Length: 99
Image 1: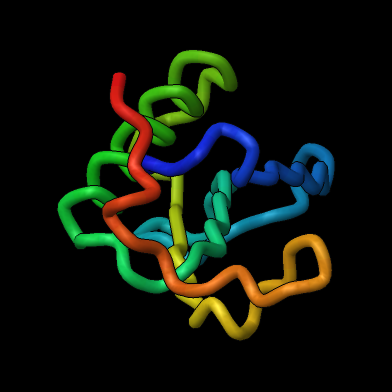
Image 2: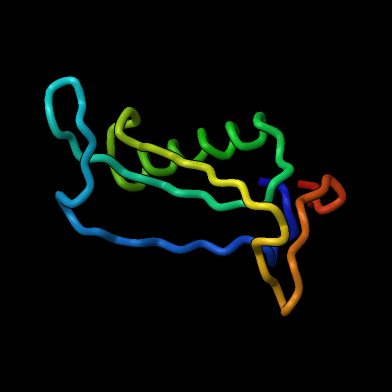
């Protein structure tokens, strides 16, 4: 996503092998779940591009099947995110970093 380089935080929760499943057409199947919390205001096309890039990375680096990578976006108003003692505010295009 387009933002200032200092804004994103990445957290990884490792549940270990055989700990996260969904009910597929043939029963339980393991999945890779990616949850993204972000400030409200980003266009759907931007989120979709990020989604696809994350799936590609999971397939390449983790060796998981593409169909088992689940991504969930949760948008928050800027008044739910605190940075340096102040509300972060909603995302605006002015915060985009070129290139």
